[in-house]
Image (cartoon, rainbow, N blue to C red):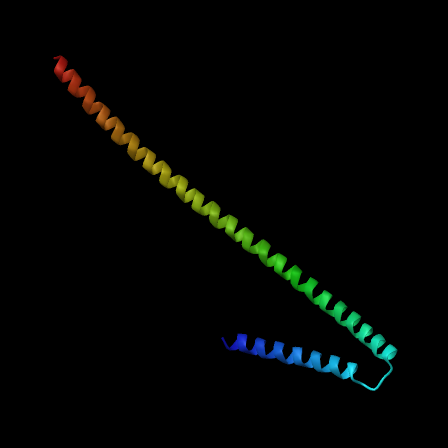
Length: 114
Protein backbone atom coordinates (compact mmCIF):
# COMPACT_ATOMS: atom_id res chain seq x y z
CA UNK A 1 0.00 0.00 0.00
CA UNK A 2 2.82 2.36 0.84
CA UNK A 3 4.49 1.62 -2.49
CA UNK A 4 1.35 2.65 -4.39
CA UNK A 5 1.22 5.98 -2.54
CA UNK A 6 4.89 6.60 -3.33
CA UNK A 7 4.27 5.84 -7.01
CA UNK A 8 1.25 8.14 -7.09
CA UNK A 9 3.21 10.91 -5.37
CA UNK A 10 6.11 10.51 -7.79
CA UNK A 11 3.77 10.58 -10.78
CA UNK A 12 2.07 13.73 -9.48
CA UNK A 13 5.46 15.36 -8.89
CA UNK A 14 6.67 14.51 -12.40
CA UNK A 15 3.44 15.75 -13.96
CA UNK A 16 3.78 19.01 -12.03
CA UNK A 17 7.43 19.36 -13.07
CA UNK A 18 6.62 18.80 -16.75
CA UNK A 19 3.72 21.24 -16.58
CA UNK A 20 5.91 23.82 -14.87
CA UNK A 21 8.67 23.47 -17.46
CA UNK A 22 6.19 23.73 -20.33
CA UNK A 23 4.56 26.84 -18.87
CA UNK A 24 7.96 28.37 -18.13
CA UNK A 25 9.06 27.89 -21.70
CA UNK A 26 5.77 29.20 -23.08
CA UNK A 27 5.84 32.36 -20.98
CA UNK A 28 9.58 32.99 -21.23
CA UNK A 29 10.54 36.29 -22.85
CA UNK A 30 11.84 34.71 -26.06
CA UNK A 31 10.79 34.95 -29.67
CA UNK A 32 7.93 32.68 -30.70
CA UNK A 33 10.14 30.95 -33.24
CA UNK A 34 12.80 30.21 -30.61
CA UNK A 35 10.20 28.97 -28.16
CA UNK A 36 8.59 26.72 -30.75
CA UNK A 37 11.99 25.30 -31.70
CA UNK A 38 12.79 24.62 -28.03
CA UNK A 39 9.41 23.00 -27.48
CA UNK A 40 9.80 20.89 -30.60
CA UNK A 41 13.29 19.75 -29.51
CA UNK A 42 12.07 19.03 -25.98
CA UNK A 43 9.05 17.12 -27.27
CA UNK A 44 11.20 15.11 -29.66
CA UNK A 45 13.72 14.21 -26.95
CA UNK A 46 10.98 13.35 -24.47
CA UNK A 47 9.21 11.26 -27.08
CA UNK A 48 12.35 9.26 -27.82
CA UNK A 49 13.07 8.72 -24.11
CA UNK A 50 9.52 7.61 -23.45
CA UNK A 51 9.46 5.43 -26.54
CA UNK A 52 12.60 3.62 -25.39
CA UNK A 53 11.15 3.18 -21.91
CA UNK A 54 7.85 1.88 -23.29
CA UNK A 55 9.63 -0.56 -25.60
CA UNK A 56 11.77 -1.78 -22.72
CA UNK A 57 8.74 -2.30 -20.51
CA UNK A 58 6.83 -3.87 -23.38
CA UNK A 59 9.61 -6.45 -23.74
CA UNK A 60 9.50 -7.17 -20.01
CA UNK A 61 5.72 -7.43 -20.12
CA UNK A 62 5.88 -9.75 -23.12
CA UNK A 63 8.32 -12.03 -21.29
CA UNK A 64 6.13 -12.05 -18.18
CA UNK A 65 3.11 -12.93 -20.32
CA UNK A 66 5.05 -15.80 -21.92
CA UNK A 67 6.09 -17.05 -18.48
CA UNK A 68 2.52 -16.85 -17.18
CA UNK A 69 1.19 -18.57 -20.30
CA UNK A 70 3.73 -21.36 -19.89
CA UNK A 71 2.79 -21.76 -16.22
CA UNK A 72 -0.89 -21.81 -17.13
CA UNK A 73 -0.29 -24.47 -19.82
CA UNK A 74 1.65 -26.59 -17.34
CA UNK A 75 -1.07 -26.30 -14.69
CA UNK A 76 -3.74 -27.05 -17.27
CA UNK A 77 -1.83 -30.15 -18.37
CA UNK A 78 -1.52 -31.27 -14.74
CA UNK A 79 -5.24 -30.75 -14.14
CA UNK A 80 -6.08 -32.55 -17.37
CA UNK A 81 -3.97 -35.52 -16.29
CA UNK A 82 -5.69 -35.62 -12.90
CA UNK A 83 -9.08 -35.43 -14.64
CA UNK A 84 -8.10 -38.31 -16.96
CA UNK A 85 -7.04 -40.40 -13.97
CA UNK A 86 -10.28 -39.63 -12.11
CA UNK A 87 -12.30 -40.44 -15.24
CA UNK A 88 -10.47 -43.75 -15.63
CA UNK A 89 -11.13 -44.59 -11.96
CA UNK A 90 -14.81 -43.72 -12.34
CA UNK A 91 -15.08 -45.71 -15.54
CA UNK A 92 -13.48 -48.70 -13.84
CA UNK A 93 -15.92 -48.47 -10.90
CA UNK A 94 -18.89 -48.23 -13.27
CA UNK A 95 -17.68 -51.21 -15.29
CA UNK A 96 -17.16 -53.30 -12.13
CA UNK A 97 -20.65 -52.43 -10.89
CA UNK A 98 -22.13 -53.10 -14.33
CA UNK A 99 -20.43 -56.49 -14.53
CA UNK A 100 -21.46 -57.36 -10.94
CA UNK A 101 -25.10 -56.57 -11.69
CA UNK A 102 -24.91 -58.35 -15.03
CA UNK A 103 -23.60 -61.44 -13.25
CA UNK A 104 -26.41 -61.18 -10.68
CA UNK A 105 -29.02 -60.96 -13.44
CA UNK A 106 -27.47 -63.85 -15.38
CA UNK A 107 -27.32 -65.94 -12.21
CA UNK A 108 -30.96 -65.10 -11.44
CA UNK A 109 -32.06 -66.18 -14.93
CA UNK A 110 -30.05 -69.39 -14.68
CA UNK A 111 -31.61 -70.08 -11.33
CA UNK A 112 -35.10 -69.52 -12.78
CA UNK A 113 -34.33 -71.86 -15.72
CA UNK A 114 -33.39 -74.69 -13.38
